[in-house]
Length: 237
Image 1 (cartoon, rainbow, N blue to C red):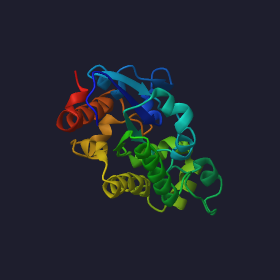
Image 2: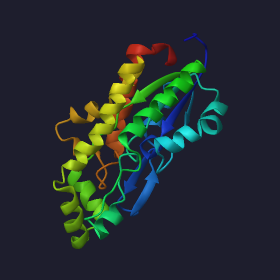
Image 3: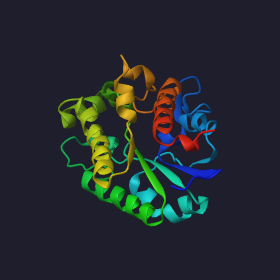
Image 4: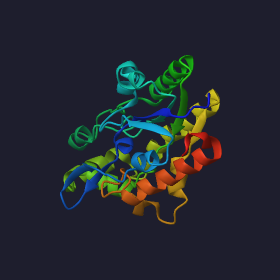
């Protein structure tokens, strides 16, 4: 990468990138001012464009590379997808646990689409950096998607077999991100293990069990800064 005085960086992903947290006092999702992207941006020699979107998945992301990403003329793109891709239609499962259900993005499609995005950026001499998924808390997330409805909980538990299956299912998508980075010989920021290294990682998640809270965003910011200091220190002020 050419050394410059100023760089354009893009963070491309979902609500975690956006900085969305659940505000228990307000009873709704809000964007955290002290999110990890904003913390990092204060240390950069350039501009950080945060293109994270609530509910975004990798398919939508791939469809909007030109309209959303390229017009920012990025030097580097941090890619953070998977949390919505691995998700299921929990309301449908709660209504009929005997049905057959697929995730929003099948794992093989997630992998191939991620590879296509990487190839797209490489051809344009844009530097892609992948980020693994923060771990979720199975019990909190289970309660959240069942909306504290006992009948829904019974049905979703019947379909799952084991509530901890939620954790391991989401983990597959994070592992696929790691594998894809390795196969393409591109950079990876291991956000997941930064959480799992904590004594009680679920302390750093919101009540919904999946969005990092304010302290969780600090963990992500510290991990990204550690990576930048070790690998791309020229990006820092």
